[in-house]
Length: 260
Image (cartoon, rainbow, N blue to C red; front, side, top):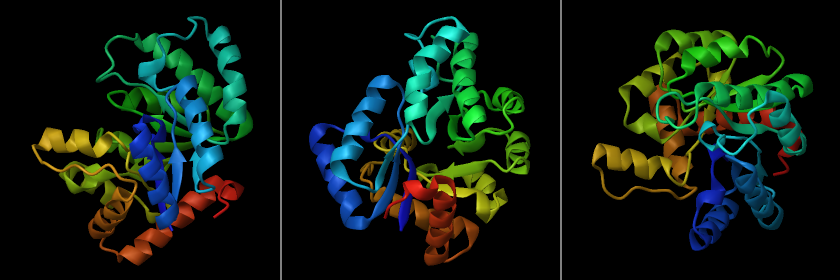
């Protein structure tokens, strides 16, 4: 079974979403549908409830979506707790000190810590965005040893990456595996038991292709098949072996949530 551990189904247009759901069904793609805020969580819930047992929606607050939340840590926790409780896995959460220039780092961190505190108390998995804040996140995660961690699309320093690996954090690899020597190097360092695959659809591949000056970007759920091929190539394994490892790791995290 193919596994897309990080995608944003709510961001597809209505017609593209229908095509994406059909593709997921036809190709049996286990899909973790990340949310960035309350509105996207509610949309992903509806998509999963009406569409397929293959889709697992998760609630999170992306650092770029923190602006409308309360300022006080206690009020943030009170507001988010019902949504966090409802979600079996928490994501996408984290910090962004690179692209996000509007929202103060302190506000991002208060929201991030509220989500991690829930994971710590409940032993849940958190899927974490780290752009430009890799070292700060590394420091923060020391305070939450019982939270289970998945690092999404890491592209920071090798030193911090090795610390993440030493702590046993899972790592998602996606479409940038094809374009980045640095990503392929990090992938080579990653033990097979910490590997996960993702697309970050529908925007990840088009953004990368525009950045690379390449035409014809694919944002179909079936992009995950190419991702698996690229991971297999970088790890010098067969595609079948790679797919089996990625599926096992996802099932170990998701457990009884996987009905397929």
